[in-house]
Image (cartoon, rainbow, N blue to C red):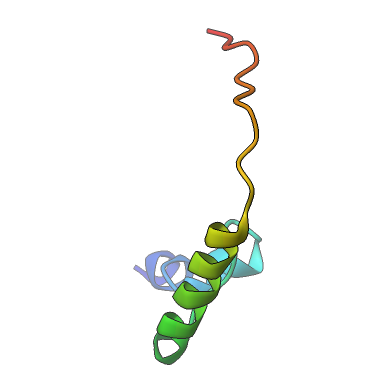
Length: 54
């Protein structure tokens, strides 16, 4: 139970760079707006799928 509590904390994964960080819920609209603005301004290039290895 102690290990679950320790490893279940959001900062546990962020400290190990398993994700891109923790967003404060009060800042979620701002972060989402920035992400959507970045997507809107991105240019789409030709598709380059490469080789799918099985």
